[in-house]
Length: 414
Length: 109
Image: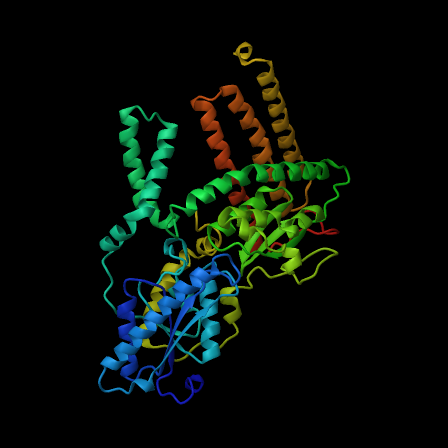
């Protein structure tokens, strides 16, 4: 394995996926010290793009990621300079963004990107920031450690002090997310009960507090903004009648097909690459597609929605992208709505039937299986072995649930 | 109770109720006639969207704009959120199991 280390190195390279966490600073220090001790000759800090190039708001997110990478790079150089007995020039610090060409939906997607990056750069080691949680809501995701344990990479977690659980909960639970969750729950409770009846108010406050404490971390992956959220709700209110009309129209068409004695259906599985932004927007779009009879979202993978269509009419409607356009309108306003349709962008594919344009995708073409043919790593360090066994044991019984949770169920709040 | 509703409202209630019945019937027919799990999932969601949609609209009209009518509208909202999620879960499970959608010429499953 040593022969594919980076050129001229003794210690090999390490890749560190990062995001802004409380322990990031300490992790950088740990890496600088390890590198100074001769363990690594190059440190690659990578950020996974949570957007796809061309999404609305790409520029904003890129700017904030660039700031993060710049900060990390500065820290690493400062830490390396602090260590007396090493020449700073010996250790290379690389910062980069990966994954900008597709949406990443679960731990498997992240690991695939990470492995691809490591292969391209001859990297064998991964160091994880203990607080690193891609997508922000780890409770719903298969653990990154488990997915990584099935690859050739040597993984370890940076041994840095973590903030205690209590601090973390308090930190996450205060602020605007908590307030929004609390307000929403209380409003819903009182809408069902009687706002003037003191018993309902007291129990409502208690219930809303429980809901907000337990779910505000899970339900939001970004702070609701006081200017943008009301605009989105307003535009959403415009969208609902349009969606209902669309549903009514397709229902009538599909009803005619079903009641026709010849049953003239022509089902096919199709692919459409959508540009709406990950998280809530893509969930909204996938659900809208499913709500419209004749089209059914089967899978969201690699930035594509796999959509089953019952009749060619429904498929054409899908490729014309009116729902995609509406979703962009709801989340980003009028400007973003004006993009070419999926058909014009050539972001579509048909897997089945007489018009098929692409080969039918296997059910398990993602994540683990593509690594199966690769030789098993022989040089995994003893400590990595131990932790891999641990995650294996816990990962096994929840595997089935995890693979489904990775996709679209992450954002639940309206 | 019916006397108090007024003729227009009563007519609307009847029309909505019949529409709901019609789409539920279509949906049931579809589940029986269509050939595989994916196409059945399409039509099963029809019963929820317009079948339940029209029926609940009729209920909301009958109940009026007090507590019950409002709750019916909320119910409708939640059906519209949960229905596609459930349909997606079924379709996705089928896809993960490697079930290839039916195409022209296949056998019914």
